[in-house]
Image (tube, rainbow, N blue to C red; front, side, top):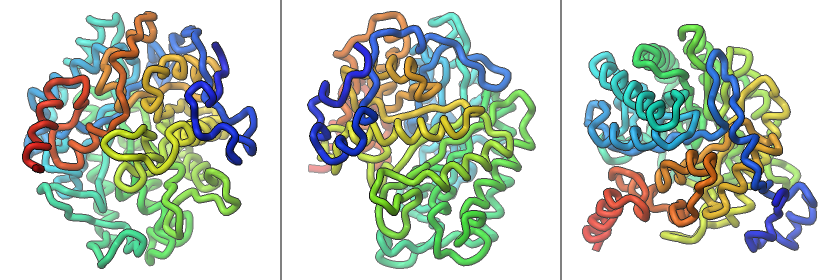
Length: 438
């Protein structure tokens, strides 16, 4: 059942100019052979037991100080039991004013003991359920233009963007950006103290660090040239990676393409093709030079073009582009980055849009070597034990994510976020939200 093409899914790509241009390359690899997905892989001093990763998905269930709550523990215990060897912990803000919502996690001197207890709980739960300890990566971030620390937008932007800004926003000064580097270092050291196995410097989805990549017109040391636009990423990765203990995995989740179109869009191709990874590869060179080991490749923004960052099918709204085209673009980008940087361990994303076919695609991606880890995001919310079930041959298509966007709707409205279809807890939250809307 290998190399099934888009035809399997009835995609609108069949017979289009895109399909003709890409020929046999324009497909999602399918397989029913799980051998490659079960293979261990080394990341630094660690060995992951399999090739499945759960992506960072914000639950918005901390207290107002950013401390994990009982719901945070419940959610991550369930995920840890699910069988994925690599667990990418959700975005944790490096400061209060950089939170994406009032209930975003934020690691501090005061609550590091609770994070430590959470990490131990996750590791114990996975070991008891699966016989191994997972590798857990924490994601550190400043939300920038999407900061909402008090429940209302309080944007701190990299630059004024006339494509989306109708009036000037609060633009981060050079001094402000410089001041954030020590905060990333502080949070990273606290994460190491808490027992996380790796630290991710989040540089994606148009949050502050990612938005700077497209600051073509910005004045000062963080805008204009490629060196300036990537300076903050370079400064933070170097400072954090230099400060961390040797055994901690150095990681990043990076946008290699924005897909917005127009002048202020990173990675746009001038010849009409999907993307231009020239600058993205140079950015990854910087990451690798500073000691980077693990790279999670992504694109787009859940705020501006969710069909690019997380391809989805018609549900609560209608996507602007075909889901399979979006998945192919994501996987092709990750594959090209992997080929250009064979020394890095690569994670891809977007697979949840395949629904009942995800198991075949996961096995196919691992078998053909287009990625080192297959990353499940929304799917892990709907079907927390999907990794275990795929690896054991017990995959149940009735439990899959339907890619409806419900979890994102909850997040956007500053509510606890999870699967509104498969999880009764979040289903009730969504029902209450709809009632209040009416």
